[in-house]
Image 1 (cartoon, rainbow, N blue to C red):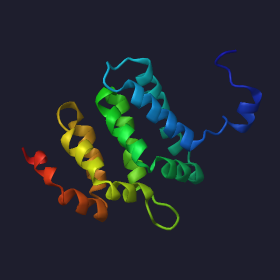
Image 2: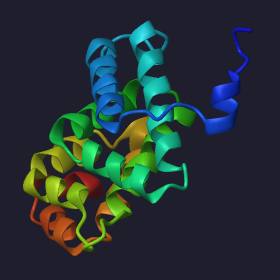
Image 3: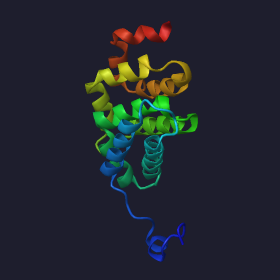
Image 4: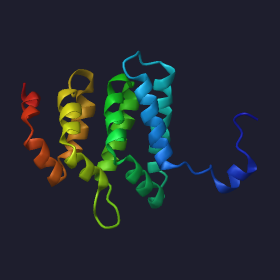
Length: 170
């Protein structure tokens, strides 16, 4: 019976996850696992939380997606997401990139985007994470994330005004 869903789960769907809780668990797992090899238990927890977050974003329910956007649009979650990239395997990095791109491109009902606002207010996140760390095996992932940021005028201005932009041309 370990893998069998209950009748209630089957009728009502799985229990709803709290977006803030998912983001906090991801940040906690990344904080405990960065710096080690790719198979530590905390990194596995980070992978699982990342997939849960992505699944909630892809649920098709706009309310769930907006709740996740609001929960993820903070400096701690974004820093954890960027810090996790070097230790995640390629497929999981693609999921992280896809999640980031979805968060950056999504808008709330009024047309605002809390993720874009947060990134524009904290330009060091983009500079340190996408420009400086976007080399080697992370080039594809960071390049796609940076490309999504450049689709927004406010973030494009931030990136173009960075001193470290020259790293891309070396």
